[in-house]
Image (tube, rainbow, N blue to C red):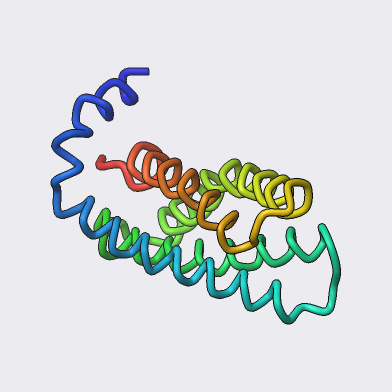
Length: 147
């Protein structure tokens, strides 16, 4: 709870920081990769209906998350931990922290596209807003925290 309180107390400062600017820039690139890969899969995978929506969304999300891990580690949070063990910890905790966001994104996409029959791209953009916010909080507080 103290970590969360400290995070919120520093949020105003963080919004204007170089770290936040880098996170926003690389987040935008991650967003483009996610949208692009998801849309290509949605248009060209030879499957139908809910399976197509889920598969397309998941594939785009995984490809974008791999990109996000390396850009967040190297350029945003500048984690310089060396060694296989620390790298694996960061890698798996980064992906682990995104599992909930992926599940919620999949549910949102299924509801928006297959139940409400909204446009795929509009639905993807809306679900990504949630994903970006939750991923920053998780990366800053859990994965790339300063020792």
